[in-house]
Amino acid sequence: MELTWKEGPTAARGRTDPSEALSCLYDEYGTDVLRLCFMYMKNRPDAEDAAQETFLKVWLRLDSFEGRNYSSIKTWIMRVARNTCLDLLRKRTRRERAAAMEDPGWPGSASREDRELMMDVLDLPEKYRGAVLMVYLQRMTLREAAKALGTSPSAVCRRLKKALSMLEG
Image (cartoon, rainbow, N blue to C red; front, top):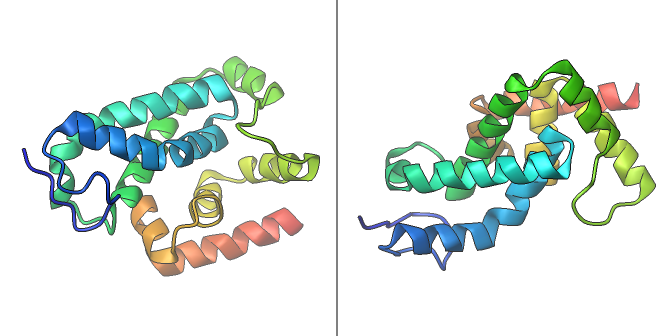
C-alpha cells in the first residue's frame, strides 16, 4: 500500500509502511487529538483512551483516506477523534458523566480563568461546542471545521456567533 497524500505531514508523506506513517501522524497530531478528546471527555484518563482509539481507527482506515473528500489529513483525524468521543460519551451512564466533571485533569498547564472558560465551553450544546473546539482550539479554518463537522462554513460561522452569545449571556 502506497500512501501519497496531497496534504498532510511532511514526514508521513510517501511512507509505504502504515505503521511508520501512523507514527509520523501521531507525532504531528497526537497532542491536538488528546486536547480535543479531553474537551469532549472532560477528564484525562478517558481522553487518553479516546485518543488511543482514534489512532487505532486511523491506522485501520489509513489506506482509505485518499478517496475521502476531506481537505487535509488533520481534518480527517479530528473528525475521527470527535466521532470516537461522541460514541464513547453515548455509552457512559449519568453517574460516570457526573464523576468525570468533578476531576477535569487538564492536560498541560492552564490558568484558573482558562479552566473556567473551558468548563463553560464544555457546557455548550454539542453543535456549538464542536464549532468552538475545531476553530479556536484546533485552529482550523471555517472550511476545515465545516468538513470535520459535516456541515457548511456558513453554518460553522453561525454556530460560533451563537456560542459566543451563549458564553457572554
